[in-house]
Amino acid sequence: MPFRFKIKWFSLESMDVAIDLGTTNTLIYALGEGIVLEEDSMVALESKTGKLITAGKEVKEMLGRTPGDITIIKPMEDGVIADFKVVEEMLRYFVEKAQKKRLFLRPRVVVAVPSGITPVEKRAVINSVEESGAREVYLVSEPIAAALGVGLPVREPAGNMIIDIGGGTTEIAVIAMSGIVNKVSIKIAGNELDEAIQIYMYDKYNLAIGKVTAENIKKRIGSAHPSIKNEEMEVRGRDLIAGIPTKVIMDSEEVRESMMETLGLIKNAIKKALSETPPELASDILEKGLTLTGGGALLRGTDQMICGATGISVMLSEDPLRCVVKGAGMILENMEDYRELLMDSK
Image 1 (tube, one colour):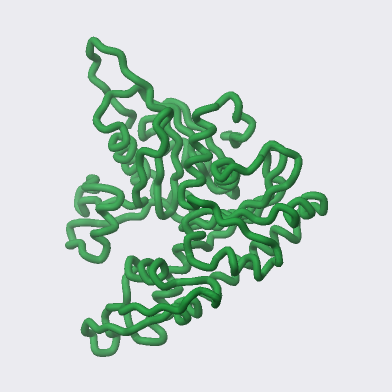
Image 2: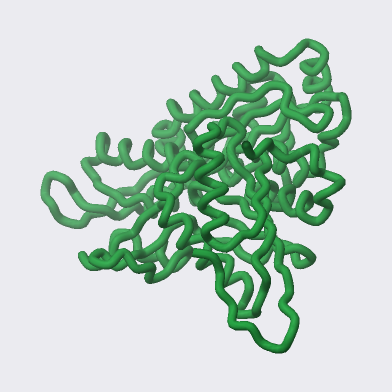
């Protein structure tokens, strides 16, 4: 349902926004204001009625602790919409929160989406954003937005390779002259690394841990390269044999071992993208190096891992989690100037 406003004797503003609608996180950039919201892409619903209770960070804190009358849903899966109606509710909640209870006209919205999105998935995104209250919806591919957000010269004829590791997808693209020349998009990223840690704990220690615990392990002591200092942490979970709570000590080497296969798939995808790059652009990439963005890039040693696998230098962006929404925001601020970077929405 679109936003409804009671008519009063004052003018309404228009808060146009750019959205990075990710599997793990949703970020919103407001025209003229910058990034105004960063939330987890999940909602809590009343189990019987399906009514929205809350969304975002508050829901993440509830994971694994909810009673039977509350259902937690992650409506985004592998970078695309898995639950159409819940995404509408979540976006409506986030946009209203970003507006801070001020009155606005229905906004224009720029949404960053995976480069491998299908026409059906495009239509699902557009419909969800329109139903949440937007009057116009524009799509931009995540690699283009990330490259723009990190400051790469996307309009020049020289090639630039961007590697954006998100929660649900890893996007690898060669960009030149305002377009994607070559791309590889795989549905393997941060979430699969968390799952790999859970499986490892199950297999080695007969220990069941939740997704939040697995993510904390990855963030605190996880690494993608052996040169990173080895650290330890206490991990608590449920012993699958005794059926009681217990704890074990885990170190960085074990975490890296648990993620090795998944990290290998990401490395293979990068090599595939490089092997399919035209020779002239490959020469540019060898000279300039690779640019690494996305929340998955925060895993320590990821840049060193990729450099070791490809022999090409890797530049880790200063603010990897926000590159995509910053780039989408730049397009929003200069829509006419950047119109050629937008995807065909048909």
